[in-house]
Length: 141
Image (cartoon, rainbow, N blue to C red; front, side, top):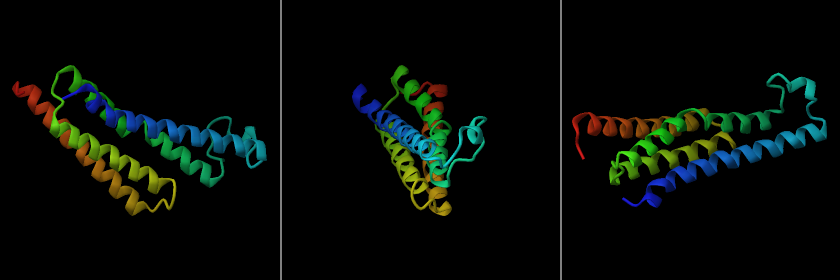
């Protein structure tokens, strides 16, 4: 499989993370300039930001949890030359569920929807890791 196709879902995930980071920085800057929060209230990571800003910040922070396993797996799939259609489908499922998770997280924040998208993505990533591990451990192509 061509490298560009294997890396495309990873690039989309990175774009999501960076986009959320920029949005969070914008909101925090606006909150500080507008007086919604004073630096002394947040200097030690206290959660004193306005709720909407904190919601985006938590979504941004979440991109450094489960997606890290996706990044590692993508790199391993490339290095070991095991990236195939099965991996690509699971990678896209994972990334699309991350996009949906972030969309719910930063809008309605309905926990049952957010949790559902998270769980569906986590299951896709788990399956991808199991497939990879079995192939490596059994010496399969």
